[in-house]
Length: 465
Ligand code: 4AD
Ligand code: MG
Image (cartoon, rainbow, N blue to C red; front, side, top):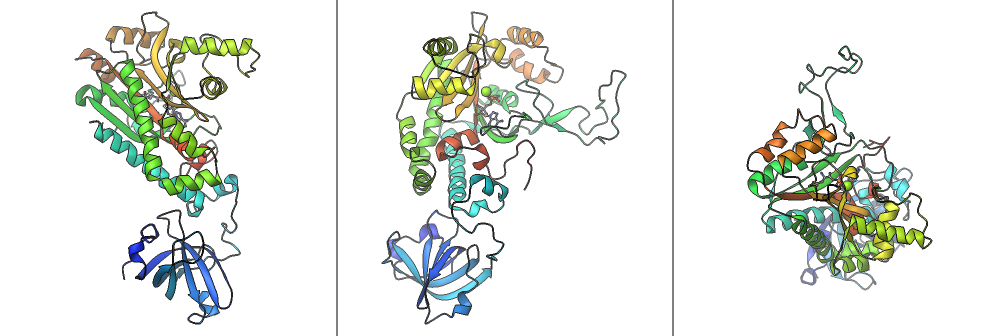
C-alpha cells in the first residue's frame, strides 16, 4: 500500500479511507483502553495522531513506541474529536522500523536550549523548530531560483577553488596537497607553490563575483548561488566560516537599477515565505519570536530608505550629540559597526535602509569611483535585527581607474589578468550584489543565531558533523 505523507493527510476527501503512514514518534500517552501516538514524518510541522484501541493491540506490541522510534502504521483516517487536529488514524496494523532507547535518545523533553541542540546537530532536524527552519531554508532557495528565472537571469556556476581574493581582505582558507611538515621555501622564506596541486597558491572562494562579472558581460544578467568561505575569526551570531551566498550581476545597470533589484528581490523572497511557509512561520511566531510575522509583513509593505553614507554619518553624529552612547566612535570615514547600523534601521528610520556611496577606503577595489574622488558606489542593505544583509556595488568599468585603484592598494594582479580583460574588451557599466543566505534566513525565521539556520555550521573551533 502506498504511503501517504502527513502533509497530504489533512484532506477532507481522505476521511474514511485506509491510509499508510510512516514517521518518527514524537510522544505516546494513554491508558489501558486506548493509546495515542503523535507521529511526524518531516513533511510538515503537523503531527498525525494515531489511535490504538487496546482491544486490538497488546501492551507488549506498543512498548517499543517511545519518543524517536520509527514506525509504519496502517489504519482508517477518521475525523478527530480531540482539539487541535482535524483527523486521526485508527490503527489496524503496526510495524516498528527502529526503536530509540529512552535512556540514551537525546531529544526527550521539549524545550531544549539552542546550545544543547547545536551539540546534537545530527538529530536536531527532528525537532519542531529545526524542521520548520530547514523547510523554510528549502523554500527560500526555491524562491531565489524562481525570482531570477522569472526575471531572465541565468544561473551561473562559479568555481569554489580559486587563486584570487575577491574582497581583498585576506580571509581565505588555503587548498593544498603539499606536505605541511616539509614545505619548500625560497631564499626569502616564502613558500614555493610550483609543485603544489594547482601549481600556484589556491584557496576556497570568498565570493563568486569576479567570475560572475565575466558571465554578466556575456550573458547580460546572471546569478550565482553557492557556498562561500571566510576565515574571519569573528565568533558572532551573524558570521559563519562557510555560508551560502547569492550573487546577481547585471550588465548595463546603474546605482538606481541596483537598489531597485536589491529591494524587489528581498521583498519577493519574504513574500514567498509568507505565502508558502504558513504553518512553519506560525509555529516560529508562537514559539521563537512573537513579532515575526508582523515584521515580515511590514518589510514587504514598506519602501526601503535610500541613504548616502555621508547623510547617515550626520544622523549618527546628531544622535551622539543628543546623548546616544555607542561603543565605537562615529566619524566620516569610519566603517559602521553593527550598533550604528541598527540605530539607523531600528531606532531612527524604523525600516530597512540601503546605504550608498561609502568612503573608498573602507570598500573593495572593484567599486565604481564617484566624481568626488572620495566615495564609491557601494550599497549595503541594512535590516532590523540583522544589520548588513546585502553588500553590493556598481563596478568600476574604466580600465584606467580600476588599474589605478589596484596599484594604490597593492593588489597582486598577476592572477587577475582575465578579470581586467572585461575592462579591455567591450567594457560596460554593470552592477551586482551578494546576499548572505543565512542572514536572510535569520530574518525570515526569527532565529537569533546564524548557527541555527544552517544544518551543520562551520565556525572557529567547530567542524563537527
Ligand atoms: O559584503 P560582502 O563581503 O560582499 C561580497 O562578497 C561581494 N563580492 C558581493 C557582490 O557584490 N557580489 O558579502 C555579501 C554578504 C553580506 O552582506 C552578508 O550578508 C554575507 O554576504 N556575509 C556573511 N554571512 C555569513 N557569514 C559571514 N562570515 C559573512 N560574510 C558576508
Ligand atoms: Mg559587506
